[in-house]
Image: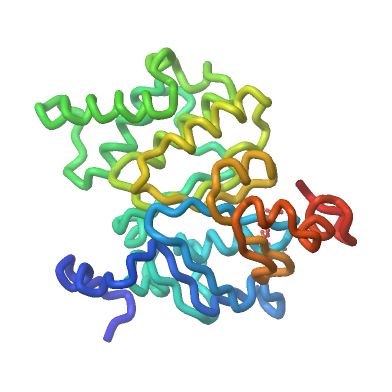
Length: 269
Ligand SMILES: Nc1ncnc2c1ncn2[C@@H]1O[C@H](COP(=O)(O)OP(=O)(O)OP(=O)(O)O)[C@@H](O)[C@H]1O
């Protein structure tokens, strides 16, 4: 059987039994002799909001890359909504409702906020791409307005992206991740470079997302991470070091020693 073959939707739905959004079992990714992540076992329930913390080089980005399909794991399995996607290319994972934001901006600076979100919605709708306006197009425009509202950018919806503040650009990236029908979003350091006011806005946006949309967030800002997540996975040297609620992680002496600036790593938060 071709491991890249994708089952039809009925077959797919019948394989969805666990109710979990994401399940990693024994996932290892080697770069030559270096294990960037080792034997990672991790479960994210449907609609769950989880933070992944860890110092530089802990393996957080590699973990995301394995989940998205940017990298294939060297060993182990990755299940998305109950389906083994370990060998699926990235676009097949996107089709199943997985989205990701990046640390770097992927926005079209010369287009308006509206047009950026519109293009993301068109890309996600899988219809034939056309710039001719139709009724379907009108429905899409309504959806675009809803997404812009969800990230509090309505007042600047006609502004060019290049005219937005850095924080507004990060908010727009969240709107793009919401295009289509996402069920699980991977946020890669969304608070990086934000001012305190922009961080408060980000927390507000993330905690206001529809409850059926789960997310996993890599975030060095502990204050943001622990406020927007209901569960935390702490990584160290490519392995899962601790799991718990934000309170448990915050109060864990080993975590404090390792991550909050008292350990040999010097911390990174
Ligand atoms: N493409 C690659 N080729 C070789 N080594 C890599 C590659 N990507 C990551 N690594 C190595 O794997 C380890 C984990 O890196 P990774 O970027 O996943 O960590 P991280 O926790 O995301 O770090 P940061 O917080 O700095 O982004 C590091 O030692 C890194 O140098």
